[in-house]
Image (cartoon, rainbow, N blue to C red; front, side, top):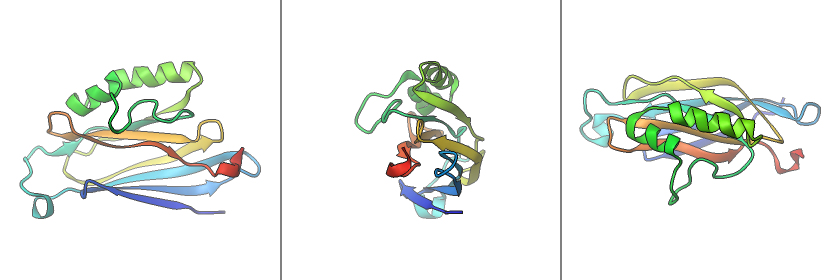
Length: 162
């Protein structure tokens, strides 16, 4: 069993950990991951927080094409916009379903929300393969007018996995 860990710290108040629990490319061409989102957003380190500060559902998709849903400096899809502005993932879910129908995506990821500013969301048993090696995740920073956090098109397979 080969274990790989990737840790990303963004905006100084949250951490994403993507941990491979089994890497099986030699036989099945699939890898299984757990994704752990840990928020350390607090008033001591980050200024005054509203009492209702929280995170919307952590949602995402495994897909094959980079920058399918959002990219820094580019216009996001309507679904991403709705998550950022309202914490509503309905249209994003429809966009992912369409991408799945067009064989551009494989799985919609429907994680939990976090009702407080600090805490952890874990997504277990996320399977990727050589055909759909990219992961995009996002959640609204609430309450806010249009802030969100996310990772975009993170490749979770080795280049030699083809």
